[in-house]
Amino acid sequence: DKTYEEALQRIQRQPEDESKLAMRVLSWITHAIRPLKVGEIQHAIAAMNFEPDDTTLDEEGLTDEAELITVCGGIAVIDQNSRVIRLVHYTTQEYFERHRSEIFPTAQVDILYTCIRYLSMDPFKDGPCTTDLEMDNRLKNFELIEYTSH
Image 1 (cartoon, rainbow, N blue to C red):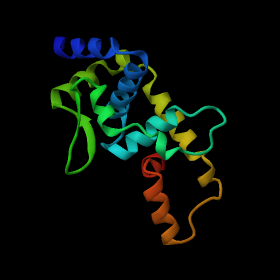
Image 2 (cartoon, rainbow, N blue to C red):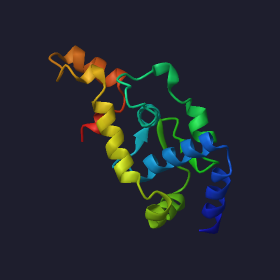
Image 3 (cartoon, rainbow, N blue to C red):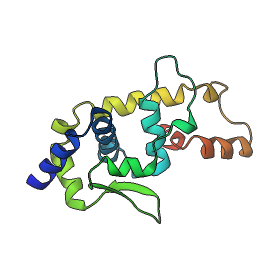
């Protein structure tokens, strides 16, 4: 546990924006109901950063995947084959599972709120897709949509 406590302390000593980003990434990795791909985490982080009047996702404003990993101080990695962002070792996952309520006390609410915000964006206000092409485009352009719909 000491190794992971020290890693978290290093993360929290980063500048506030970087520390906040790292904790959000780690929270999603730890609490998601399934492993998430890089694009899903990028969209989740973008939705968490929405201002109250934001109704669209700025693709250019997505956090770079290298930054997602760097701010996590070596405890998160991207599997290059599956593109899943995950904790570096199963013992890391076990540590976060044991201590998740202390480390991420509001994670479940934050994830729920993020999913609701994501589904409230303008592109989804027209209702369900009516063609396979529309659905394919929606899945391609809104990478978190599959996760939020479960």
